Amino acid sequence: MIIDKGAYLMLRSAIGAYTCRKPPVPSKWNSVDRPHVAVLMPSNEEVFRLFLSIPIGTKNPGHKLEVIKMEELPAKSIVEVRHGNLDYRYYRRDNAMWTKVAEARNPFVVEVFSHGCTPINMQIQTRMEQAHEL
Image 1 (cartoon, rainbow, N blue to C red):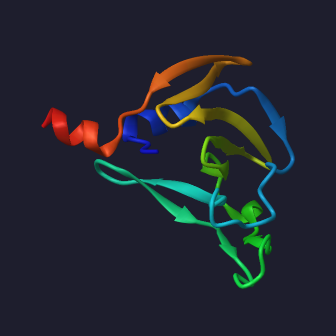
Image 2: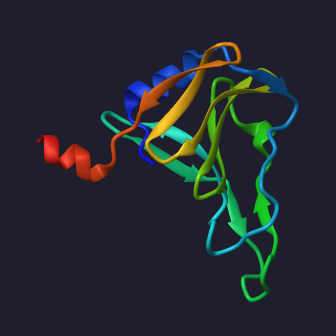
Image 3: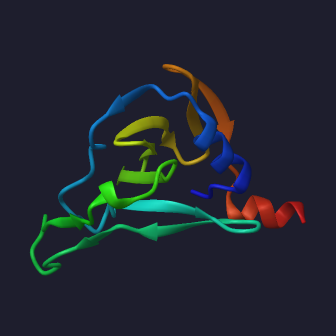
């Protein structure tokens, strides 16, 4: 899933659905769903993912997914938590808490919580669609 600069700005300004002390992150790794935790970092034109998680002990099935301390991230950081192929969640760091600002259960639509729990559906283009437009 590609998050562009406009989508990133919407995530930063969204009101959010709820606030929690720690976002629920995946704890087990599997090679099919490829769960991860990543912080989104904007650049001039693109938004890059810097992975905060790494699988430990890849020889055993269902081995642990280790995540660094997310409390050290600065305020307004956006974190992508992927639990599975069709389960992405986005959290924003607000002081000492995390606000769920969006989720995606479809690779082409991200639901941004700009008005509390009522999402705004936002179409996400794939790299192929972006190249086709050029």
